[in-house]
Image 1 (cartoon, helix red, strand yellow):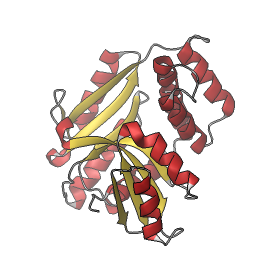
Image 2 (image 1 turned 45 degrees about the vertical axis):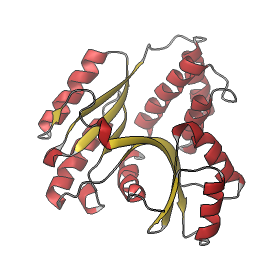
Image 3 (image 1 turned 180 degrees about the vertical axis):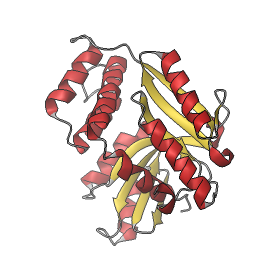
Image 4 (image 1 turned 120 degrees about the vertical axis):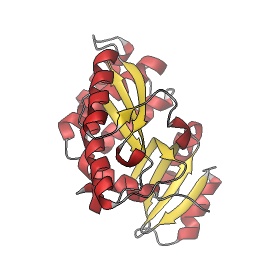
Length: 246
């Protein structure tokens, strides 16, 4: 089954994101809050909340922090009023960039994101300008070295109604419809496979090749966007390599 090099791009991004643990906890708290606000505080009936909590637990976020974020979302504790916002634009080399944010001040966040685009030699565009280049999908990554029987892993994924399965170097990448993400993930874990990463993301329909220097500029822009407190996730259709992330 054919696919894109999603796992390689994510590996390049993930190492840098995990370094800023305190900032990551803050971002995850906001994510939990808005999930609880939208669907209630019970993760058994609110799949989005369950996913957010699982993600927080996956980076060892303290239980008290998680519970406090849930209560802020449901209104049991006073918290911020947050809006979900997506910004779209063009980075160095004209590549597509998508930015997902949670903010209590749209004007501030929009201005901050616009400045970061412009400083990097890109520009923020209108809604929809690059969104059509991405598909929102669940992505589950599994260590192929740990589970060498590719057919068995693929069978488990496809039996769980995953959309696609591919092996990219030493990683299996399973993509799903967002509405089936939790069910597919549960089935894969129940089949005995540990995951390296599991998340709903904006995945490029196709990747754009860039040279090393342009790639480094794109990577710096994505890092700068990641470092903004309101930004939850940043995506690009540029095919970034480890060399470009340096």
